[in-house]
Structure formats: structure tokens, C-alpha cells
Image 1 (spheres, rainbow, N blue to C red):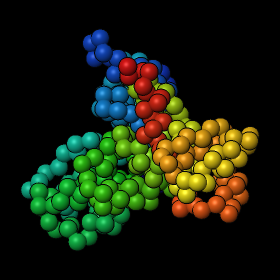
Image 2: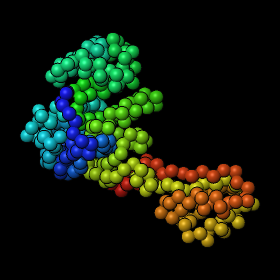
Image 3: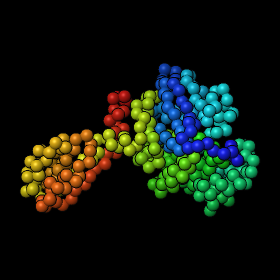
Length: 317
């Protein structure tokens, strides 16, 4: 699509309808449907074996579904396979590369294979996007794992696709390398549709504006990371550490408040205060503790991993 004008933000770029895949008696993907629009970064979340990689392979045409349909930028992946694949940049979980090639020669090779017109300009563009300038003349086998992953990201971008499919893009990277790759993904999202699979829930919080939770091939939740966090256990729970002689007075006051669901005394000097419906009542708590000897107050934020365990517990058992 090099040289073509991009369509407006919000355009529907991925349509998945009733997608299913079986491996013998195993239902890897069990009739899932979803849509992704330009500007979306959709996090496909689930434990190992949930069906994420199978979905990624079907979205990119590497695996044929047993049932269902995938459309990419208006092209049916089964009926217009070449046109659809031209719109896709794919980063598999274990992206192949030729270790003896330099970064520049590998990207030139991919550009040629993709039929990119101005290959030199395309290589320059993705080298800059993936921050590969200082290693562009090194052989791939001499690079750190983080740089190798960025080379793989660059090859997925070489033909300037409208749709990006990333399977576990930061798997195996150290925290600094993960941060670099996550920042790159965010920078790419403005005029594309991105789907990334991950089992790293914090990653979804950082880079995604939508999150699907999948387990045993079924979509259990389609929401935003923010909404999921708001539903997570312990969201907006307030932990106080205060002088032990102040606890009885405070606990009596809290029991009279309608917004307070319950109070748990963890130690002689520590309380957890659970608000109704996970709402934020820190201001009201601060008023109640005025004049008391408070050592610390911490407002907890529910984490996606807590909600994930809660959502998948019944399905996985």
C-alpha cells in the first residue's frame, strides 16, 4: 500500500465472524467474533493454550479456519487472499530471520519479496521507526534479543501495512527491551489497526485501548483495560496504617458510612477499607481520619491479573 492515502481513523479494518478451529477432538478456537477499527490496539489476552496463536495464524492466512470468515480492509481472506495479505504486517511469536545477513540486507530482501517500489526509502523508514540505526550494518545473529525483536517488527512494517498482527511481541525480553517495543507499538497505532496477543496483563494496560480475554478458544470478555481494572478485585480498596489505639474509633465511624462495604483488620495497626462497587472514597476517608495518628494511606488499584484469574477460574477448572 506504499504511496496510497490512508482512510479515516475509525474505519473498520478487521472483521472476524464465527471463527473456529479444531485439532482432532481439541477445540482450539470455538466460534469467536470481533471487529477492530483504525486506531485500535486490541489486546488478545489469555493463558498459554487459550487459542491466541491459532487466532493470530488464522487472521493472517497462515492457517485455514474450519468455520467462519475473516475480512481485512474489506477483503475476504479466503476469497481475496493476496489482496488481504498485502494489508497485513505479521510478527509471529518466533519470527524467522537470516542470522548471517545484516539488518539492512535482511530488510531489503523482505522489501523486495513484498514488492515494495522504493526499497531504500522503505528500509530507511522502518529503521528509523524501530530505532535500528546504530545496528543497521550488523549481522542479525550478533544482536541482542531486544534488537532482534525490533528487526522482526521492522520487517512487519516494511510495506507500510494498515493492519498489524503481533503474536507475543515482547515475550522473552527484559523490562527495558519490553518498554522500547511497547513504546514502538503505541507510536504505530494512530493510523493502523493493531492486534497483539499477550499473556502479560500489564502490557495490555500500557499499550491497548481494547482487551479480549480468551480461554479455551472462547471470548469471555470484550472491554477496555480501564474498565477491566475497575472491575478487578481490590480496586479502590484503601489500606491504612495508623496508631493501634485509633483503630476502634475509626472502625466504628466506617461502619456507619453507606459507601463502606466492609472493613478488614489485617494487623494491630493496619486496616483495609472496601468501598461499595469499587468506587473511590478516599476523600471521605481522609475526612474521617482527620486528627487521628495516621502513618500511611494507600489507594489500591485492581490489577488485570486478579480479574483474569477470577474470570477464567471456572472455565479452566
